[in-house]
Length: 168
Image (cartoon, helix red, strand yellow):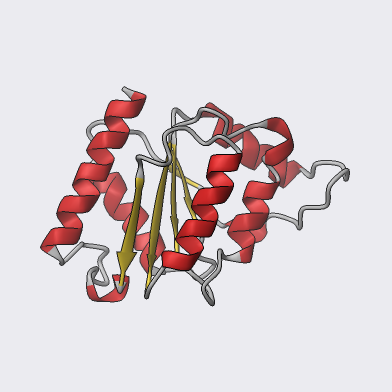
């Protein structure tokens, strides 16, 4: 499983949520969390592909599926996450690859819709069925990454079960 956090802040709710997902599914999935999309160079169409991008794409291609967990910045997709995805467009790296999209933020609806559209255009597998918005994430997860809201925990568990069934 290749996990990508759209947050550039270490210790963010999205990083903690990915850690929680890994714990919840540890008996069924092997997780690889990409360290930071902020470390990837800016996408410039036609430029030579930098080594860091090649490594990112190799990890993506080696995975049975992808989990993206991201905040919303000013009603938009975080620039570093969009940049990372842009590096994959010309080679169809997401095409058919089962992809979970979780937007965990204060609101999240605007960026979620935009990112869902991008992932649909690049043919991320099953993303329409594997998505979740967790609004007011900071009130639903503690400092240890534990989901403290029962409804959110059940929604996350169901999403991950659906994902596991998809990659099964």
